[in-house]
Image (cartoon, rainbow, N blue to C red; front, top):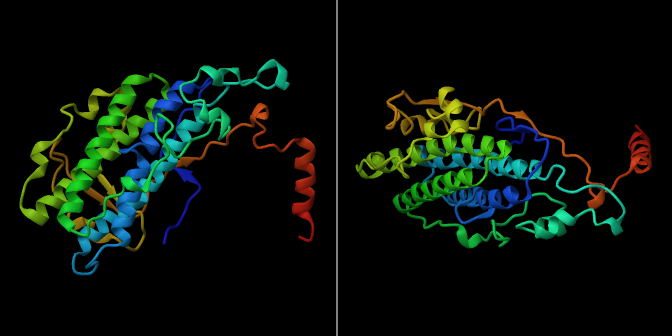
Length: 296
């Protein structure tokens, strides 16, 4: 089961202004083939369906703990998309066309369907699909797929980073480049233990290290590229049998932390009255507050 905390993995800057076309590009990192919805659901179903959980416990613990982190990645990308909606439109009566910015935006569906919040889809508006989940039941094949999936996700993050200079988008991508790099190395080390093949010699793919990205460099300086979290206070501790030794790119020692990162507060999204979101005015709020206090 999962335990939820009302935190996001890292603090994101609250922008003065959003960017609807950056929103559209970042959607690929959420609901694209190599987006966080795919990494989450691949690892989640592999962990649920894992055969030999006791016999192959270090591998199960690895996939299970990374699953929990991926849930946080989905939340982080979604939050960044939501912040990129700030002040893209303006309040006013319908006849002055307050949503006019949506007409020329790359993804008009975000203005029409979700009140400028994240879609469970990619940068072209295609809905995410379970067809993106690979769960063969074969340990080595699944680990190899996960290694490839993380490399695809890394490539897409780098490209979206180069598409937008919006600080909120780049902060999120910089962090995920570092954390995604951890998962790349983790699956490479798991493959080496399972097969004897040193997959880490292929890294980095693409051949560009994270330190070249300004928004990623500070997270590497904090050592986040060398830490694997269990995301549990009591379980998944056997990841230490896989996440050990040194980082193949930097030579720094690897460390397992039992539990979760400290995280940061979840941003409180502003009302968008021109989209009727959340559709609760001051009078409604007072009535709701009164009903909430009844019979207490």
